[in-house]
Image (cartoon, rainbow, N blue to C red; front, side, top):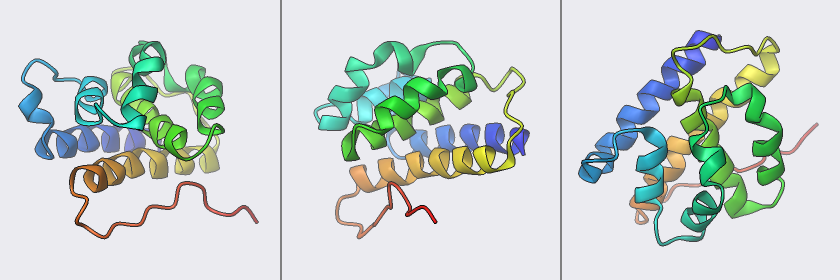
Length: 138
């Protein structure tokens, strides 16, 4: 499941590149593509404020508390948190992911894939895409 998550982050990077990330030319990493594609929006401002978190070369499991703190700030911050998580999982793809909890891995997979869906919805506002940021807890 860990390798599935890391593989999906690579697929998300390729999808984001196809959505227009390739137009950034000098920005080839997922984190940089997110910054360019979300520039000029509230989410883009949040990404700029959390630039260090977005580009830190540390494993995502070490950054999880900070990402979750950002997520708790609300709607746009939750979107930024998904983008940061996707970028950090992709950035750490050459290292073993040290997450053993199955539910946590599934949650991370949903959030990484949601980062792609949110970016698509942002870039194609005429698509009637509805994305649930936080599903109700049982």
